[in-house]
Image (cartoon, rainbow, N blue to C red):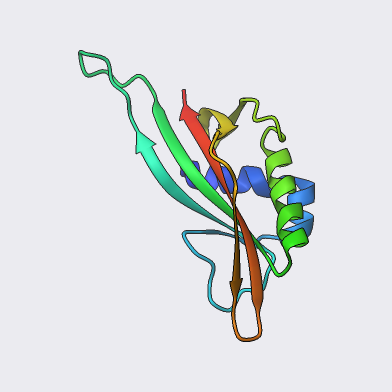
Length: 136
């Protein structure tokens, strides 16, 4: 099991998130025919700091989690549920196990990004969150 699938399982284990999206949490992009609400996650950045001797100190992964809904209020509700599932609004570090990998997760200091995308008969609102995962 990968770090990404562990992250997906961790978020979907939260009852509030699960009640909103069911199992609709996709890597990279959602299928064309999926109905909102849903989540998408993407690996944004990966770093592996090393000592002067070349030994790896840790691994850092930054993920973008995108909350998609047909209304602004719905997207914001999903955003709040996802944030609460991982440490809450204050971005305190959460130490846990993702797929057998010990990690610390916290929310990035970057501001959340709100977008509105309108199709011919399908409005979509989204909120992008940035999650940092440090592998111990």
